[in-house]
Length: 86
Image (cartoon, rainbow, N blue to C red):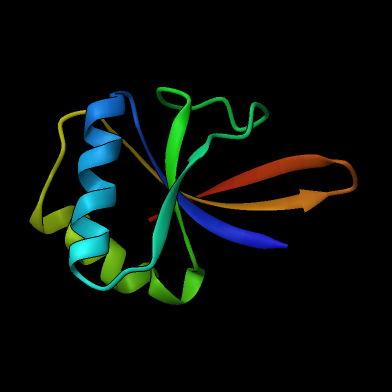
């Protein structure tokens, strides 16, 4: 299983980006950031990799000051691994 997340250092800005994604047709949800990823405020916006281009365009159009980055998250064995993307 793998998916994308966008992480911020602010919970408010995470919620704002979730709202932006939802209003612009990027199916997403707010999740607890996997502990092993160890970035941001503890919650992230999760979305399917097929929406990465649109999500990146929206993040650039509506920049948030606490933006950490986009990460691809996958499970390796019994732990989460994240790779920074874009």
